[in-house]
Image (cartoon, rainbow, N blue to C red; front, top):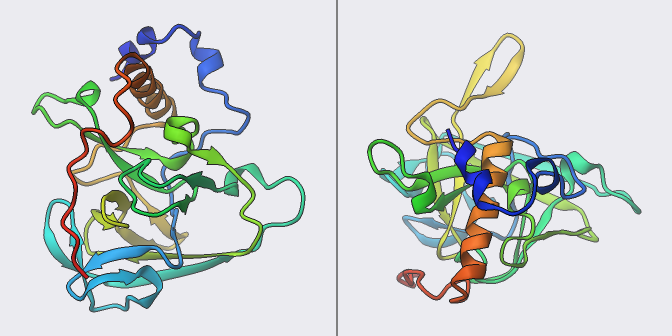
Length: 224
């Protein structure tokens, strides 16, 4: 679908895809405790949510949380296991009002004319690992354990985090083999190679038109 994106870069595809860590698809992900989510009660830490609470979504207004998944990640000293090495997201890199951490398999909704589909939709979900190098986003050892919390809804949703970042929450289904996270629904979820190609093209455009990462960002309404 997005093979033409790689033609916009000067680096062969084999080189641009490898940043030292394996790319992984959108999966369970999770948001770090302390991350604020837009809810019917204002901006609330994600860990303070409970089933039955309502969260503001990108496309479907207020939606009810049906499940809250929690996980504790305890990083070992030294090199982190690549599949779980988080990324540090500087302030304003993704319209986030504070610096934050992003898990490599957490989906993020990006807007770009480079991904407009037949309906003219300029949005796509990419895994956090594909964002390495974009606006200062980089892999870092967190130096402490990470408490991850993910609100789940009846259908796939995109929710507002820290003012303007858009995080993807896939609906889950129970099967005999366990819980499986699918790529169904209304959102375009890019594979790892396509996602990395998109991010590299966005980086190339910003290098060509250096206006700053948030120069043309729509400033969200502040409400508590």
